[in-house]
Structures are given as C-alpha cells and as structure tokens.
Amino acid sequence: MRKFDTKVQNLKYQVLREVARYSWTDQLLEKELDIPMSIVPGRTATMRCCVYKERAILGERIKLAKGGNKENPNVIEVIDIACDECPVGGYEVTNACRGCLAHRCEDVCRKDAITFDSYQKAHIDKTKCVECGQCAKVCPYGAITHIERPCQRACKIKAISVGPNSVAQIDDEKCIACGACVYQCPFGAIMDKSYILDVIDMIKKSNNNQNYRVYAIIAPSISSQFSYAKLGQVISGIKALGFFTVIEVALGADMVAHSEAKELAEKGFLTSSCCPAFVDYVKKQFPDLAPHISHNLSPMGAIAKYIKDNEPNCKVVFIGPCTAKKMEIKLDKVKPYVDSVLTFEELQALFDSKDLDIASMEEDVLDNASYYGRIFARSGGVSDAVAQALKEQGIDNFDLKAVPCDGIEACRVALLKASKRVLDGNFIEGMACLGGCIGGAGCLTHGEKNKREVDKYGMEAMEKTITGAISMLDKVNSKL
Amino acid sequence: MIVQVCVGSSCHLKGSADIVELMQKAIERDHLESEITLAGSFCTGQCNRVGVTITVDDQVFPGITKDGFSEFYQEHIIKKLKQEGSI
Image: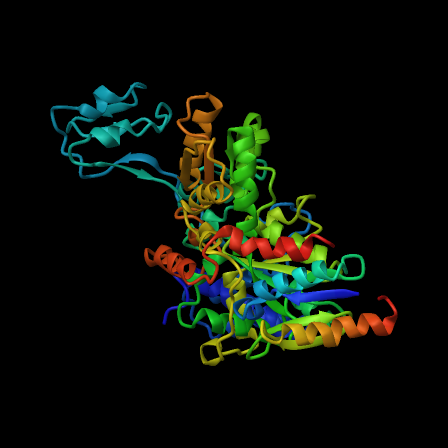
C-alpha cells in the first residue's frame, strides 16, 4: 500500500529515515556524508540536471532533518538550490484566443491592460495588469490562464514572494507555518525543520524510561493515517521506539471543549484556540480580535500540562499532522509542557529507521477520550464538541451560533466580518488546513476518506460524553 | 500516603473510572482525606489482562477489579496506614 501522496514526501522521508537510523547508533557524524550517495546512487540523474545537484539538495535536506538553521526562528524554510525558479507568469492569453469580436476581456478590464494585434488576438500589458482575473472569467473560450507558482498559490495568506535570483522567499512576519507550501511545492523546495534528533536523544538519555519517562501524545488525525496497519499496531510501534506510553490528545480536546464552552457563554464571542496557525494568523493580521481568542491552551497543551502537573520531570512529545505545532511549542505558555513535536511523516521515518514492521505487531489499545474530543481532527468537530459541552453543562441561556471555517481563506472571511461586526455567529472555529487537521502538511496521505476514518475512530471511543471522559481526571487531579 | 489509580488507555478500558469512584467513597467513608492523596497516573507499564493498576506509594498492584476492591483496600491501604501508625 502506498505510504505517501507524492515522491517529494518520499524523498524527504528517506532523508529523515537515514538521519534517524545513524542517530540511534551514534554514527551520524561519520555517516552523514554518505547519505546522499545512498539515496541517489549511480550517474544517471532522475530528478534534476545531474546527480551532483540531486545530492547537493539532499545535503540541504539533511541539514533540515537535523533541525535546520538555528538563527531562523521560522520552522518553514526554503531550500534555495532546490527551488526550480518557476516562471512567474500571472495572467496570460493562450493560443486558444480566437480573436473574436465581442472583446469581453477588454470591456471588463478596468486598467486598460488589454490590447489587440492585427489578428484581433488579445494581449495583456503586464505593466498595467493588477491580476484581478476578470478577463479570465469572462473569456468565452477560457483562453486566459493564470500561471502562478504552486507555493504562492498554496500560500493563501500571501507570505511567499519571488526573491533574489527568482528563488521563493518566505516573509516570516506573515508566515503562520501551516506548511501548505511544503506539501504543495512540486520540487520539494520548501521544508519544515525536523526535531527527530532531539526526540531520539531524549529517548536514548531516558535509559529505557528509567531516568525519566518520555510520553507520546498523539493527535486524533492519526486515525486517518498509517492505513496499512491498525491503530493499535501504530501504538505498539510508538512504544517499540522507546516511548513510555501513548496518550490521546483528543482527551486534551475534551478538556478544551469543556472549558471553551464555559468561556464562550461567559464572554459571548470567541474564536477557537486549537489550531496554532489560525491563532498566529489572528494575532498577525487581526490583532484587534486577538483578545477574543479562547484563553484555553490547545488540546496538545492541555493534555501535556495535565501530564506534567502529575509528573514534572517527564518529557512529552506531540505527534501529529501539523508543522505549525513546531512553532506553538516555542510560545511561553506552551513551552513548559511540550518538549518536542513530530509529524506523522517523521514518525514513519522513525519506524523504518529501526526497521519496525508495525503491520505485524500486536495491537495495543488507545482509549481515553470521547467521540467529541476525537472529532476535533476534522473541520466542524470543534463546533460540534462545544455545542455538546454546552448541553452537558446545562448552559441553556446561551444560543451557540458556530461558524466552522474550513481552511485559512474561510477563516479570513469570517475574521474580516467579525472585525467589522457583521459576522452572523458567535463562535469562530478556525482551521488553517482544508478539511481540518486531517489536511495537515505533516500527514502521510490526504484524501476524501480521511474524514470518515476520524468519525469512525470517534464512534469507537468508550466514553460517549465529554464529561464522562474528563470527570475522572478532575477527581484524581484535584488533590495534587 | 499517595495512592495513584492508573487512568491510561488499558486501565481506562478496564474500568479505572469505577475504581477511582470506589476509592474516593472509601476515603470519604473512613475520613482518610488528610492521610491519603488520591492521584492519577498514565500507565505504570504493568497492563494486566483484567483490572486496573493501583500504585500505593512506590508499590504497584495490577489487576484490581471492582469485586476485589474491598479486599485490596483493607489489605494494602488500611493495614499499611496502621503499620505506619498513621491511623
């Protein structure tokens, strides 16, 4: 069964796997330079102009696998030499232009950017064009296309521009680390920094969890991943890597839903706080709305805090679909609770770096959270959970009008309306990735069926209510 | 005395909610609130086929079920408190 959507992911994975493999045995320093050769052997180039360039780019990927440029605060980086400097076309008239009489393109263009040659064929004057796209919309032949770099098209918040030497450039002031460009660049020229070496080090120094315990907390979107094995086998695999035990972040989501419902009823208007890219976006682009971001920690933060409150000297590693979580753990209010972040891609690399065949392992169990905590992984889930939490707590004097925003563009529209006080709703559920966390850049695969998998995983939860899932935790934690 | 009931996935499925409730009631009934700190733990690495794991100070007891709770409570909590001279 296919493990990844694209060859780009596969290449990145191979690098991570090899870096991890040598790191477990403390051989990375001596073997590092052999890795590019082992991935691209021989003399025939298959990806770039020559094998030497292919290997040079792999060298850059190794740097990112080892944590990347420490001086750059962003976790998303452009690999300059891997950027293929895609043409920046903008709107262009193709040869499908028939040279018609109507000239709708000319009529609709407010900038007078369209001219016609002696064959009546349209041309766009790039010095006048403002890329409004109207001409492309009205052309009856669809003869006008928009040629855009995939990274720029992926980046809905417009943080990517063309820098010196035509190489893509990320504006770190704008970037929310959602990772859309990482997943969309067909050349794999943008990558998220990896902290696999930190995690391996943490596991090794724990001395089989004797010195301290290393907890893995896993995002509910894992239910749609690793489809070649059963979820219980993935849990066994994570333990086999050396983690002490595995806990559901969905339990943190239950905690969040419970307190977010209360906060919402109290304040009357709120945005969710679980998606770090969305939260960052609000802070950067809509600072006036920032006070309305729920004051709750994200589900990751909530469950990690619960674990660390019980056992202060342990380590907690989040494993999920998200590159923005790598930024979230740098925040002062999250830093004390989460020690590192891995993506599902990186987890796959770790499994294979130890040659663990998880599909043949015994099934372990994972069950703490409720249905509602688990469906946080898909768009609409947070809204459903908050509605349920209001009901369970008997808060009936508040009329919830949730606005689930699927993807950062939908978030932008809702936030814009909210900032102008014309939003028809009182709770913005913001998810930067399309489909919610299951669309995250760190997922191995993305697909239509993933939502169904999350719902199925939700239904399998033993706890049917949010209160059921968290009440016991309150009891045992209250005296600490 | 610190009594930790495991609330990890495996124990959760085997009824740690019930055990926590029984423990809480027993502590209340015997007025041991100041002697016993009831806490949770995530997995002690001793997952049993049946029952829940309870850790009393540093001692781990796997496999505690609802039926076996009273006996466990008398044997490993009350008796120990008496030995220590706490009650």
